[in-house]
Amino acid sequence: MRAFLGKLCDVSSLGDQDDLFAGGFVNSLYLVSLLNFVQEEFTVVLDEEDFDMANFRSIQAVLDFVARKRGEA
Image (tube, rainbow, N blue to C red):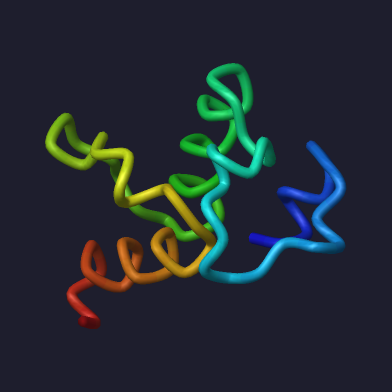
């Protein structure tokens, strides 16, 4: 996740719990790239109900979401 986000912005000060949107690390344009990355990198299929901003608000939120999608949580 951090390597992917590093392609979009400076993540040197980004913590796993930091809000990606409020912190300016991800904006609406980068969100589509983030969603595609999550689907491809973690081999999960996003459904309409998955498009809750809480699932993508931080690095940790994304990792927790992926674990739930895979049935690991």
